[in-house]
Image 1 (cartoon, rainbow, N blue to C red):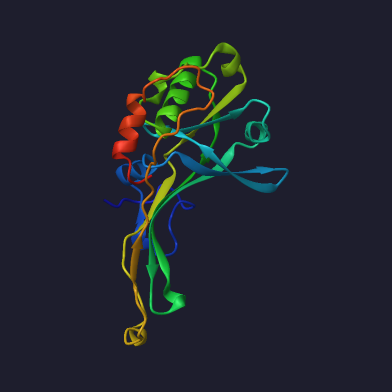
Image 2 (spheres, rainbow, N blue to C red; image 1 turned 90 degrees about the vertical axis):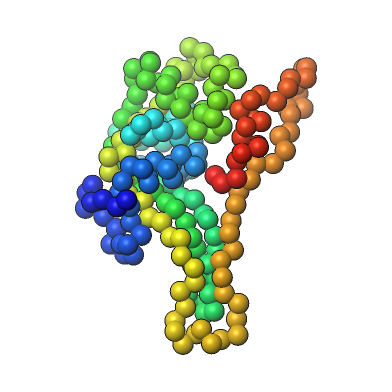
Length: 221
């Protein structure tokens, strides 16, 4: 279901029919991944870094080292732009000019808020951990006081977000349809492989439920 863009900068200006602004579409895309690309500025120089994230309701959380450059930059200049993209297929056409891709993507604009309340910070880290593999938080040691002190967590509202989705087949120019070249879609699927145990393990431990479930059910990320 489409809805109105939340702001001028979140409004799609090209291929607007592929734009979605409703929470169901946006959250559905975000929940299929665990890596975002976060852009920020340092001394008026743009930077972009991949980082893990977790979603709780209408808030996206990410974390980093207390002394990290990104964390220090966000405290001084909190405005960010975040992208999450899922590749679903390569769209091959008869003319190279018309080649495309099927994808689902979300762009988020907002101010990164430093999370200082201990309960929210722990909940954010739990969400981030479970975003990677659902249920993993309960199967590993929780952060201790020293680790929490060394970690920054930021929150970004999903209020100003937009999704863009392409699910079409080839769109050749009419004159190219008679050309003797193959055209179609090559689906792309990311699948979990066989888990490899840590070589430094001191004893055999069975695969936890989160990993078993992830390997047996994960097809798209």
